[in-house]
Image (cartoon, rainbow, N blue to C red):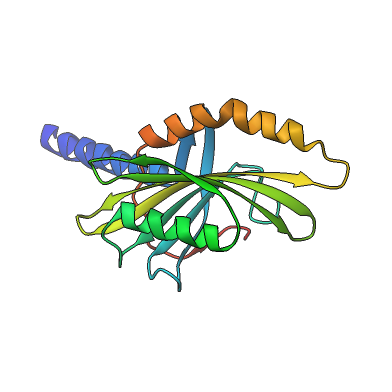
Length: 189
């Protein structure tokens, strides 16, 4: 009887451990907020998986903040990847700042883009790239979207970004990048 109880307890504990691991893989905690995995698919561009984490009340069509995890299986150098990305941004007339380029091979970049969809927006992006599985690269992204129109006070947005940039860069630099989820998932894209 004790043996059966011990086996059942072991199975229960192990099941709980697997469930707990799955839960953490499906959520990211960043800067005091929780983001939930709502989209994952294999990228035709990079041949790796893209995972997008949104705040619970948001999805692809209405997000204001997002966390992304991007897998680059055909790249081996985070620093080289950031350098290429920086050049692409420059060709598009966008400025960027590389904030991390260390001996561990990590690299990071910050930039802002403007876009039009159903409405105009400004998007503030921070990416951290690091080695993954020895010879690949993985990236963690934090992005914030600001909806704008002709009446928007852009100085307020600039002040908000300036006031939080150092904290967010420190947070993403020290954040652990979760394992990439390699399955297709679409919860409201």
